[in-house]
Image (tube, rainbow, N blue to C red; front, top):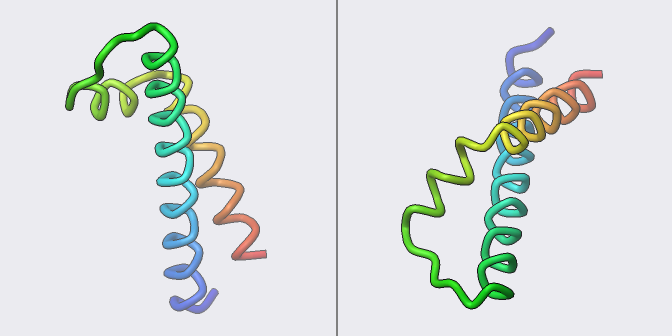
Length: 70
């Protein structure tokens, strides 16, 4: 496997993780908005440590890497 292909695959996988992170962050903002609660900077690490996010990010990374490499 050429190194450029692996580098593109990893970059695409990381981009997929960022998209998943932004989706989970947006979900937290919508949930807080409906409850009339203010969110601070603590929402950023909170989203990154949730088990659902970690599973979704790992799956997104693996699928993006697989799609690019195959």
